[in-house]
Length: 322
Image (cartoon, rainbow, N blue to C red; front, side, top):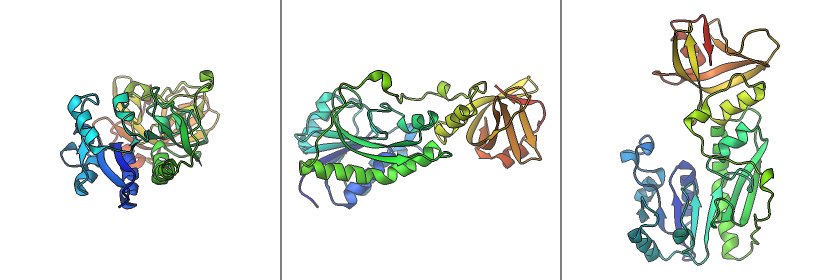
């Protein structure tokens, strides 16, 4: 195992885990891990609602801390015991200065966009929602302002026209370990010249704020079929675009839509009307054509392919979404 530098790794989810594994496999000196407290959010990812990063730490006997309060005196004292040379952060909450400023070589973060564009909590979702054709990864030194520190290294990739947020995340995850190790080696050898993000015209920037449930509702009246399509794939598979499915104007349920295809076609039908074709296709009319559902989930049921979803419908006429 490499003796230098002593690394504290900070992360929680599967995106974080991919980088942690790369560092561990290549025998970097991980003296400790900071991860999120046990939480019901992680129930489907491991026993007792542990984060994927905590599970990996337990499996490989790596010391870890799970602070609820990152300014807690006891936590900060335990962090000092590790005496890290550098900290690496991947997919974690905002760190206070008491944490990120501690190592003598600093703390750097891996962000899933080409900074300064798409600063914020959900860059992978927003680049697709906004119809971008490229994105990438950026490593940067952490400073006071969120995602605004000096850029260390960037890697650009193309976004395919039909790619979902989930598919894009997998692509970025595959190069995340390489990005972090390249950055780490260049910082160690002093072979990298950080690039400032200051003096950037903020009016030219696009942001990636946290996405809430209300933000995921599909606006079928949007005049652009492309915008509707991009929103659905940008929220797939999580947190998932949704709409209200109405039966005969009397009953409605929430309808999550995971995968679709778009059909550009002139028509005279009202927006939001549903057409079911021979038990294998469900099309929703929009201004510039139709959105054809491939996979969805009706409230109270499992997510399923459209054929199975249609087969489970008791009513197949006078359906519409709003």
